Length: 308
Length: 220
Image (cartoon, rainbow over all chains, first blue to last red; front, side, top):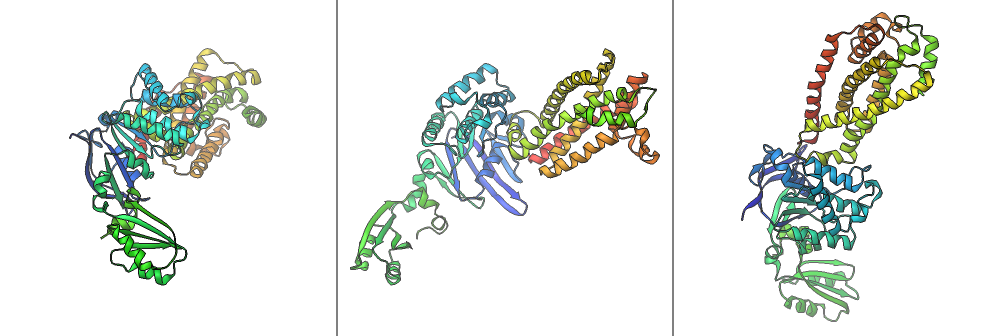
């Protein structure tokens, strides 16, 4: 497939700290790509570099084959960027803000009006368009930054926490809009809402300390861990001796406890019965088994060490 | 307020500073220049400092396919236009307060000078707004500059009052040259092209330098 964005050994430093450490990867045209990672993993910085807001210290970023630093002017109209925090002019109305930015991109007034009408109706923003930016909620401001990013019809949409500050319905509307734009636009986003990422992605890149440590679809990422289950047993009382005894069962992986609840991972359900056997007559109050998901994958110990 | 708090008491202290022109009449063009300078500050502060450091609105604008130079020029021109509107309002208020009226040619000259002075001062405020990272340093330097504009530029206080050594030092500062030339044109009809041309010429490289500072500050 044709690459929309290509990074070659892209690095970014802040004083002596490495924010992005020589990233090299490509993003296919028309795909939805999510970046996840801990705080300070370099996700937002990477988005700023991709959007052209900041230059990398070394390496190159290519947008549709054009170098983002050398061909900056040619690339600008291809990119729409939604920052984490709304950054509208507080004294202008939402519509004036969006229109002004559209005009900066050389879009004519009637096209701007049509796009504002289309996207704001899909995001249920129409009633707020004539309100000054300093008088609307953060959720509506965030929605208006999405409309603003789309008003010049970019081919690549870069979003930092697309549904931040939004209520459940607004989040749904936003994702309906973004999923509708799939194929027509390449969508690159960062989110801490893992359930959203599980629902909307073609590919997930997990960042840690400025490096991509995992890359692929959720199923692919979980391939090595799909056989694993997370078990949870709540005892009426979990003495230390019993916890030690259960933890040393060879098939029990990464055991932990919280009060009287014993957590562990296991490759098959047989492990569960081994634990029950070892627990003997100790009274249990609750049992839970669940398949592993993105949240488990993001568990730092899990990502760094793996289960085996 | 400027008139009541500064001009009225100064008029009783200063005798005719130039060509037997009364102090009130002498200070009149400078007062309009001062209104222009004061009205520049909030616009440039908002667009280049507040929108860059706090609200980030200008950072987003830099993503558009227009150069930093065009952005800087656009902001400066809009700030000058806003200040000219406020100067016109100030002119009307001053007319009712002082009753001083000049001929149309003089007003045109004053507005021409205000545009040049505002571009120079605006370039200075732009540099300051782009380099300052904290509101304290921006306000602190601006207050020092404002003290100079008020008392050392020849707008309110005639330079004749200053000791010779100090006068020699400050009379060649760009703003002092402009104000001196403005007074000369209005009250004696003498016009010097060379110093004015030099000052106008300074504006172009300065604007370019400001756009480069802007680019570096944004790391783009």
